Length: 216
Image (tube, rainbow, N blue to C red; front, side):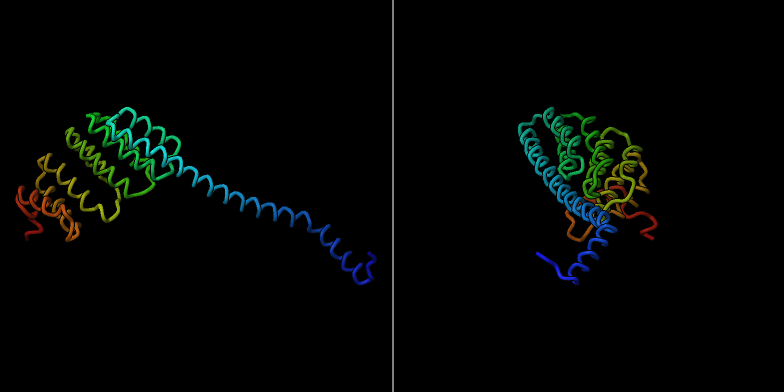
């Protein structure tokens, strides 16, 4: 097909532009497409990870039902190694800690709870792990370690439980003034419908009621 003069001039202009900028445009398109493909691949990877982690967590739950602590710990270690970035890994850590505790494997329970504290990505799971770990350390008379486990920021909904557990450890240390302050804080942080309020009040009353400063 023959082109008229105007069309030939337009083609020449396009050819000149392409010679100057064609490579740049091509690379920009490649980068954009690669980025899009990478995002799609990342989403697929994350979904795949969650799916595989879910299946492994189901196996873990079956082992819990069979009270097979050894299998629970193996499955949890596998989960934490392969799928540490998923919520299932944190859930597995808490579940494995309970299974180990029920099997009187306190070291195993502490190890799992510490893993959640150190590697967990959801603050709620980390707070639960702190409270449970502090409880085990309290039973083992490791009071300073227990208080250390409770340190750091936690979501507001766990502030009452943290203060309550801290009060328990302080009572065990016979630091009653500090324990009263901690129990009082636990009551202040607890919502009106919190089922633990009554027990906290009982513990507070058992060591002399509200702390001196609050009473004043």
